[in-house]
Length: 453
Image (cartoon, rainbow, N blue to C red):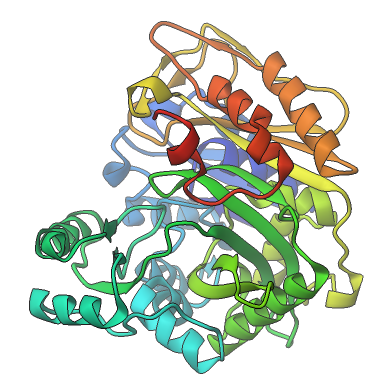
């Protein structure tokens, strides 16, 4: 195991990683920007290094400053968390060049799964089903029009280097494709520095299901069940739960085997997520298609931890240090039900516009089987520079109904206020109390159909 790890991230995920490192006896180094100087994760680490001003390009995306902090403090490894540099193969290569272990998959694997078109091609070869579409980037609008005619409308144009719900455009009519293709390519170039896009058939009413996988360098590869991430707005996840409502053991096994096969096929190492779309099949069984693979720890990883009892960050650290996984597939059982609500400083009534500001009052819920992952305290300030998530409310229950009731109770205890600060707490209460959501698993158009957002 490592002696010292630098966390190249901030906020709740940095604090989350620091806590597991402390459990394992690993010393930690936090890096921080000027606005984060007094943050909890900075205080919790054994050492902290200032790496720049608030703008992410000058701090949390500043590779020379982060590598310099690791070298200066003698950190043997870097954990990237999620977001920022977590899926940047160039950063992983720089770490290797400087003799620092990157806690994640090898750079070439990250590059392959990070390019969505390449990932589709590799997963097809591994036997995973794909929606009709392309496995190569679409290089002209004329080619896009021809492909769309062949697979049928509606279609979705996706940035090959996209992620986090960005770089996605749904096209429902042929007359809209030309503009959508041009706009998506331009947006992909601006956001991801890569204009490549691919096209696939769009399913308007599906479930978004992802399988958590862990792989080591000793032949170990397991899945830890699924998470249902279907409650989304503009492809951004709001609520996640495990297990997926109504998921049969037979389908769970099929999805898990497909996810492990895909991970093995690309030579994966560490914690990753294989994402699928599901819809009812003609025979009464759900049909599923591979969507993408995320080469990092996910925001919603706590729900998997609560139903499996496995510390995913600890497994990441062990695998990166050369140790085998501590669990086999036969060890893993899903127990009870867990739900996560992302509490964001956003105003749903105004299109989810971020509302940064001072948290004059900040009180998180507690009680049995309630977990809140957050880096904020009363008097802290939500910065306009970074993601607007304040914290993650995660609850467990012996069954889904109990978990839902506990989540609603905890949401009622969550207190956040400050000048101009709005949150998604009220929206989460409406979602979890909605009859359709409580009955069963919902589809990705749930918010669109039931909420005027």
